[in-house]
Amino acid sequence: MSNETKKYQIIYIFMHIFFWISYLISWGYTAVYLSHRGQSSTTIGLITGIGAIISVIVQPLLISYIERSLWLDIKKLIIGLKILALTFAVMIHLIPSNGIILILLFTLVCMLDVSITSMYNSICMDTVNRGININFGLGRGSGSLFYAISSIVFGYLVKDFGPAVLMPLYISFSILAIVAVIVFPYVKPAASTSRDNFKANSHENNENSDLNIKKGNGLFSRYPFLMPFLIATVLIFMGHSMFNMFLIKVIERAGGDSSSMGIALAIAAGTELPVMTITAKLSKKLTTTRLLMISALFFTFKMLLSFFASNMAILFIAQFMQCGAFAVYTPVAVYYINEKLDEKDKAMGQSLNGAFSLGLGGAVGNIIGGVIVDCFGVPAMILFSAGLSFAGFISLIIASKKENQ
Image (cartoon, rainbow, N blue to C red; front, side):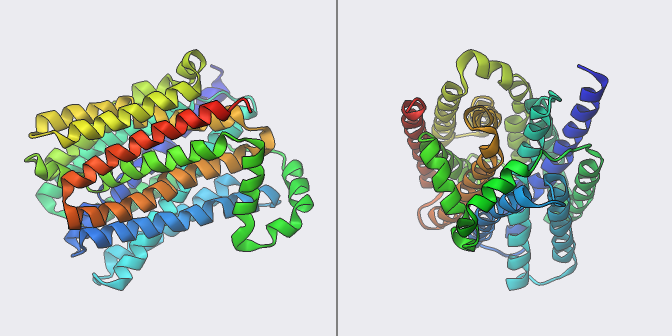
């Protein structure tokens, strides 16, 4: 690895570390913080769900604008969005309201953070495609490792000082995340091809709300496997998101508390770094398609074991299965898009992957999960999550059959 590549790699690692620690608070500890502020499970699901739905619309729109912009790029966009999220977090901390203002501001923070995730993928793939071979899995896995460490620390901080400590932590790590992105030496890919494509489809691009659907239809006709892949991603992340959003209730069902939640999150996230670091090599041996299908089964088994967890020991074992679930699916999906799509379609493909995973999948999962927990209980939510993961596995099988069409 050259000195230049090492420089890119180190900065990219810190970008992920600081971002995912802040993301842990805005998403991993959402139920803990909002319950402290008097919100019900249904309301919490709606807050995060609506935020994620908005991100589904916002992400492709922003990527489409970037492709034809002479001045805006992924790096500047990440910085701008994170500054907005930081501003709203400060307002949440300072404003005592537990009503509509809190709900609105937290929804915006959730939307902004989930929108940024796919942009971290794109900024890496743009750099790799430029010949600087930074390891995406190492960067993303490092974020998971510190997510794990922070999960334990934050769990004890919440236990000792209460959930109010979470927002100042979010603000602090968001500032560090912004600084890390600022120092990353990103170079925007040549935009001529994208601008030519934009002009050739100007009628399509001028119809605001239809922009992404029409452009997506063009992608789906060129890549028949893309739609079943995205459907699988939605289903899997619906189950994953609702399970994680209400993990504190799963843990309480097994006899744990907020410190147990910190350990559970740490176990899951801590298994991700070693796996994510080697996903590029694994995808060459097993193919990205097979790895995605294996990952979907790991998601299913993790949920089923959690359903039968009568104590924290069994639930901790279930959390270890994250090594084959989220730890594989997240980076491999990025490589899958980069491998299967033509150069001119990669940025939109990554945006759709982000929009359909933590965006649409997270949105629908959190909304439905909150309703299921309030109406039918935690066990029903866990079983539903398992069913969604298995349905995602079936959809990936369909995608694999369409790859050569």
